[in-house]
Image (cartoon, rainbow, N blue to C red; front, side, top):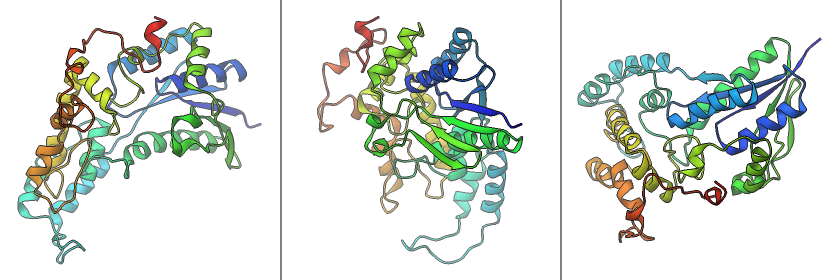
Length: 321
């Protein structure tokens, strides 16, 4: 007889932690399967928090990690053999120039980091309008895990930590959906507020991820391509090594781009000079922008007083600490 398995997508953030707590309380023992989709662009605190949850709740969280080695090797072969003629709609040549080929092939090897390998394969970083990182590094990995369970004869309920007040895009999220005969989606906190999420964890004596006490409004990629201005400033103050890593990624992904440039947090029209674009939009330029007041032209003197060890929380957690 098929068994119903409850798959909980755990990110290390407040919402998925609340969902995990609810699932453990409501579901039969042995039927809850927490999973974590590792993007390779995480803060060490996320991994530490997952370890903490395992100990505090007595669960085992399965780590999933994408591998783009095959795609990178195929892309290398395509670039090396590219002899296309003609131009695209913008008038640019379709074929990789010999100079661009040499540049890309010198660095386009699997690094073992899913986020970097994905961007080298694509020849660009994700953007708000092309957020392929979520699809390739999280959604596809979770779906593959669930499909394996269904192929083994199980029914699957996918528990998701989605709340309607998070964004306009999620404002109409359904609490439950049936997407296949053996697969359902359940969003138990869809009507909750952020305060209710933190209250649930506190009532179960579960501590929040420490990143919420260090200026982060969200927990996930460090930094996210959609990182808010205040968050980027906090990252620059507290964890500059993460930005140094991003700067190195920008160098490598730019070399894998036919255009010769790609920036982590924003991109621009290809008709502009690539050196000008990179100068305006690279990660260090965005950090300088994050240190300015509204309008991006005047430096915020108060922001310069930020201390790396000071508690800062968008959810008022410092008052409770």
